[in-house]
Length: 82
Image (cartoon, rainbow, N blue to C red; front, side, top):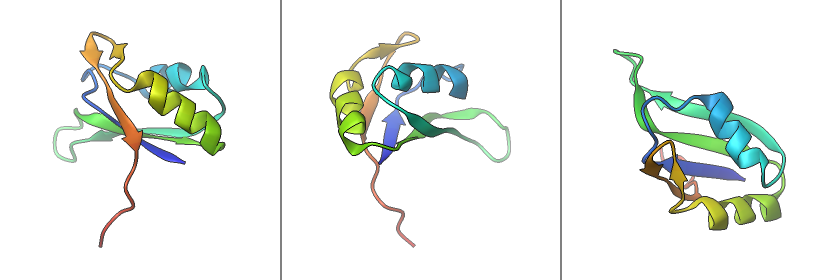
């Protein structure tokens, strides 16, 4: 399952995000979205977890949780629209 993680601290790193989500199951990938021109974080990321039940547990536990001083918004990512 692909998970959207919003309202991230701009100093958050993919390794820290992976560590946080790994508490709930196996994390396949993490990707913090960056501005193409500045290279600075846009404040949101996507985390992919292999097991949907683990992903649901992570969403339930981490949505509204504090991470690096900010309240995360965590939910199932919507498919890309073209």
